[in-house]
Amino acid sequence: MTTQHAPDSMYRSTEGLGIWEHRGKVAAVGIGHSPTARRWDETPETSMGAWSILALRRAMEDAGVSPDQVDGLVVVPETTTGANWPEGKALPMDVVNAFNTTSDPLDGVAQLSTEWLLKNMPELTNVKFTMYAPVCMSAALAVAAQAVGDGLTHTCLVLKSWHNLEGRYYQGGANAEDAIPGTPAIRNLWGAPASYGTALQFAEYCRKYGKTHDMMAPFMENSRRNGLMFPEGYWAQHRPERLTEEDYLVARWIAKPASLYDNDIPIMVSGAYLFTTAERAQSMKRKPVYILNHATSTTQPRSLTPTLDEVEEDTARTARKIYEGAGITAKDLSFENMYDGFSLFHQFHLEGLGYRGIKFGEALDFYQTDISIEGPNPVSPSGGNIGSGRSRFWMHTDCIQQLQGRAGDRQVTGVKPEIAVSGGPMPTGGSFTVWSATPD
Amino acid sequence: MVKQGVLPDEFSKPFWDAANDERLVIQNCKACDRLQHPPLPACRRCGSEDSLEWKEMSGRGTIYNHGVVYDCPVRLLQDDQPFNVAVIMLDDDPGIQMFSHLPGAPVDDVPAGASVEVIFEASANGQKVPEWRVTG
Image (tube, rainbow over all chains, first blue to last red; front, side):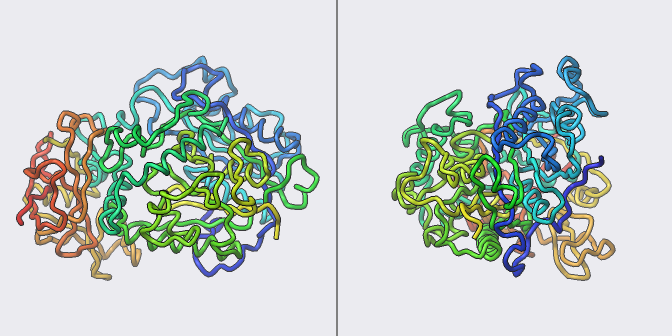
């Protein structure tokens, strides 16, 4: 079976499409997570491939679905947190040979194919539909939701995995060379780290609206607090430490005004979900969480890096798409779980959504109010990447768990969990899902 | 600070050849009369590949924004940390951005909105690179 990348037609990326034709007819019924680790210890048991299998099996178990019932598999093939397998480094053949292999020995180690998964999960005997989605779980969820709605699959696993190798983030490859090719040099010669673009937008935001970096502290404390109540996450599992306002304010800069804690910590982790039709979900183990819409932004900046104007125009446009397809307004959101990995753009997502009526330039003032899970205006109850490490899927898991009433210590208590939105990654490019406790 | 060397490829060669001649050129679509940077194989507006040209710029611009890099992933620049990375918007078209280390400007003391002019600096392999100097 050859797996194709999802065509553009599967994403709802323009305005004016109306209510999503499958609104309330697709449901999430299972969640599976692997453990987390800061970096791979190069054993087979903790390889990205092994944890992918574990997450998929846990998602099926969580849903009470047997493997032979699964007929679809949507996977993100890219698994890097920033490091690829170093050129010239010997392949870990003991790991490679611990699994059934494909033609690429890095499959299951530093990338992932559906072929590798199906070869190593012989229990998936009835998978007839496979598809790739790019980079993030958010895109994979959009593809899976559309595929189930369109009838391409009725019981579909969705997977995103991350490998994180030894060495410092992004410091190998071209960045270690004495010279680089001319086309990427036009952008990369100046040595800006990954969070630089977001730092620029945040700096402009602060100048325009008279805000300061210090005003991010309540959001950061709240996100780590929520993350420490996320037992699947990195900080809860390995470093159960609060992040105080003082910790945040004295942290070293990475790309000022982005500090160490404004950058999410790269980790090893795999996450999986099981989607099915609303009809089939009725007979499954878990309370279904219905999908009211998915929406995608594919906006490109005019030049090297998005300006604040470009960001604000696009987050507002994305929100209109989200609400239009779901048939809801901002007032219908019980809470939000928009992406945060870099923390300094979470407010762009919030302001675009108009969450709790906030307008452009008001989110940092909003952060100074009660944004906890106990209050009436929960912000990022998952804790996001800031609270649990770089997965870009804690936000989706949290929406499902909150609406099922099984978020544990993280369960929101200041609002009734009925409708929520999650997605990302970037304010100017990403996919978003609207979740609901009921199909209507 | 000396940047990584540049190995011009077929696509970017006109940009880098012009830099060696101390001229700043930016890709332009003749059909749309619209600049685009970074360069692309086709015009982002009309999709044309045949109407693209390299157009010489005035070499003047404005500092639009800046950040200060303390944790640089590029090995050759790490001894120079912290350093400015500014975004310049060209006077010829303020929608077009270029990055700059702003040679001569103090770290984190960057006058937003200040005028700048292009200069050309040699990179590690001698290829000249457009940079920007504050003029007022």
